[in-house]
Length: 382
Image 1 (cartoon, rainbow, N blue to C red):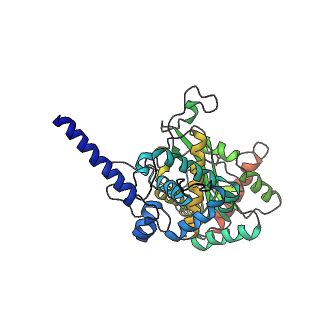
Image 2 (image 1 turned 180 degrees about the vertical axis):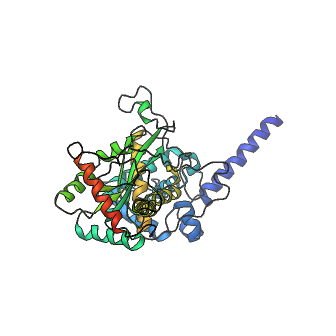
Image 3 (image 1 turned 90 degrees about the horizontal axis):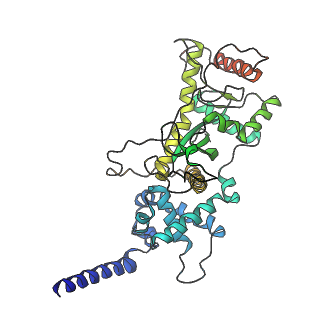
């Protein structure tokens, strides 16, 4: 009897605690009142004003609250932001003090907000590769002002986002094609950024086994740049690493250079400029930690790709409005080596003499690169 009474007493305490959390603690509206700006950014990644802006932006693309018992749009967006920012599993998000919903509701909220951020009217507004000379020139001037590298309109690279293994027998997403060269399952995501770390283009469709050059060869930015150069506008190009093919519209480093030469000077300037894409990747994943390797997206590939796109939209909104990176939790990630998902590919022998009849685009790229290198005038000028 005593044991039964003890069990009942414990259950009563648990129920009272649960009711207390429901009635007092778990009120999403309190996050805007109770939290400081710094605390709010730490949990939800956006400032309070920017979160209100996001609610207004996404509300037309989300299911309206039809009944009093339905979750409002604000609650759903806060739950999704908490997940994007922390990368914690859905039960951890549901237990957050400012999110009043069960795990199933968290899951539905993440799905709905992700879909809204992927809607073309939202996505295309915030992720856009420059499509006219006014925009191209603005970006080119930014790079030149910061790095003194003429002609750059963006930096390109790929980064891996870890996912759970798809089913081995999945006919649409066979498991083996998602294993990358570091032996974990991932999406290989191509990013192009400007000098302010704004993402101009994202391609999150390819499995982890796909190399960077192949993804670039299927990019819709490539034909745009090729046509631009065919029209004679050859002073607009991207910077990439040695995993990309050298072309007039995509300049990569020289390989095997001697010190104190025009080529070594070019490589130094190239490295100091191209670092923008590495910084961009670092900021994106530091802000939205669901993209970090050790978090792992527990979704099928298609939904994982949509979550990546959603985080890119939010990243660009934060860049546009100068939202600071959230403060790091000193207890978070202890003993974990943070992996930002960079796996370098190298295309060998691009600097060897190649007859024009064999590969004219590579030969043109070699000439364009040496012309840029010579424009730096003297070695070691940075």
